[in-house]
Every structure is written in structure tokens, then in C-alpha cells.
Amino acid sequence: MGAEPLGPAPFYFKRMNKLILILLPVFLLSFAEALPAQEPPKLVVRNRVIQLDSIPSRQDTTLVFHYENKGGSPLEIFNMIPGCTCVVPDYSKEPLMAGDSTSFTVRFTPSHPGPFSQAVTIVYAAPGSPQYEITRVAIRGKAHE
Image 1 (cartoon, rainbow, N blue to C red):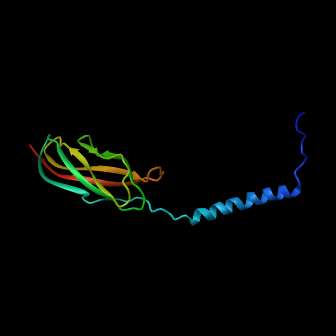
Image 2 (cartoon, rainbow, N blue to C red; image 1 turned 60 degrees about the horizontal axis):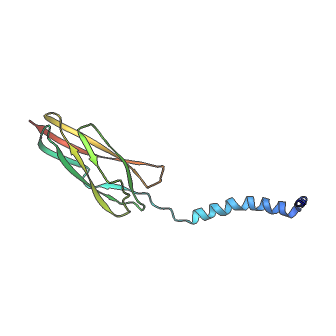
């Protein structure tokens, strides 16, 4: 009652399978090259270094850094790594579209009087991209009692 086997496939089906296996990758590669390459995001910070002349030590100071995505695809900040515990960055987790601009804040509390120089490392990429880019911003100045 079961179906009877049809027997071996004719020789031209075997040739057709080989032809498809050879031509399919060539077709897919040529199609991939025809797609326009999207320019990666590029984070440009307008004020990479903020110079503070004299601020009180052990007192919070909030600073604003303005940045823009000058690339051709959305930009997502994955992490902001402060140089010490006296620096606390706050940023949007939403992707920034190409050509758009926004800002992030950094709360800085100098722990003692004297000169200081602190950095924040920004790790960003296109959403879903395995290739990350890094840029840094800095806060410099002098704290007093």
C-alpha cells in the first residue's frame, strides 16, 4: 500500500543540481556587491575637553557634552567608561540617526583640592554591528577648598 520508489534520478537532474550548487554562490556574491555599502556611524563631540578654571572640591558639578552622528548609519552608544568613581556619565541608550545631534551629561565631584584631569571613554557602533569605535572626552581644571 506504500508508495513505490521511483528509482535513481535521471542523469540530467544530477547535472542540474551541480550547476545550481556552482552558480548559486556566484549569484549571491554578485547581488551582495550590487547593494550600496552603508557608511558607518561617526561620533563627533563638539566640546571634547571642558576646562574648569576653579571649582570647589567635594561638590558636584554637572557638565554637558554635545555630540553629533556624522556617519551614514544610526549610532548606538554601548558604554561610557569613567576614568574614576568621581565621574558619573549619563547618556541615552536610544540610537542616534545619521545627521542628528544630542548631548550627554557627566557629573563630576573632585575628591580633593588641586589640579585634575579626568576622561570618559565612549564605546559606540551601529546597532547590531560587531565592530566598535572608541572616542574620549576630558574634564580638566583645578579644585579648591
